[in-house]
Length: 165
Image 1 (tube, helix red, strand yellow):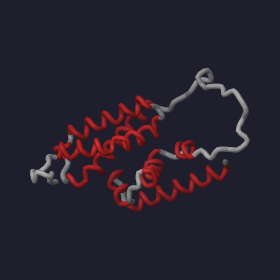
Image 2 (cartoon, helix red, strand yellow):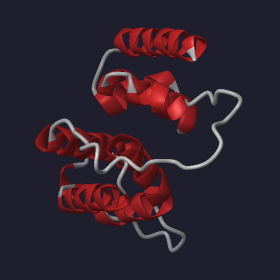
Image 3 (spheres, helix red, strand yellow):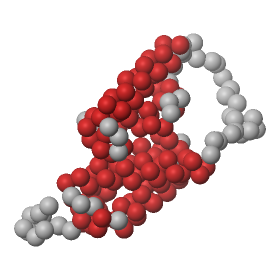
Image 4 (cartoon, helix red, strand yellow):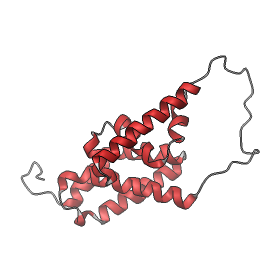
């Protein structure tokens, strides 16, 4: 990749630029899994560090965005596996005072959280990050047909869950 000065950009410079441009996307993606601002920020920081540190191994700077998404998803999955399932004590659950809603909210976040991590990643990358299916396949390191199956399975599960509410 060339900069305006005509000088070839290093992989590290390209990675830094992509990280800065997409920080909020990476943060939202991490937050959608961990539901904690500090943990999401830590995940993105660790992912950014690993991306910059490993930028020399990036073969084609054109694919820096896809490569960084894969790093971020790996960090998210690693964090979730290390943390394990979260159990709330009844003492930690806030008791809401006041009148109960007359209508039921369709809670897309809860429905997304009910999906397994792989299906959720495909749904989020496709609909919230507006990524084409072939790029999602590259990010996740899976076949295009697998990504399509995960997408349609995830959509079907979301429809069922949201119809029940």
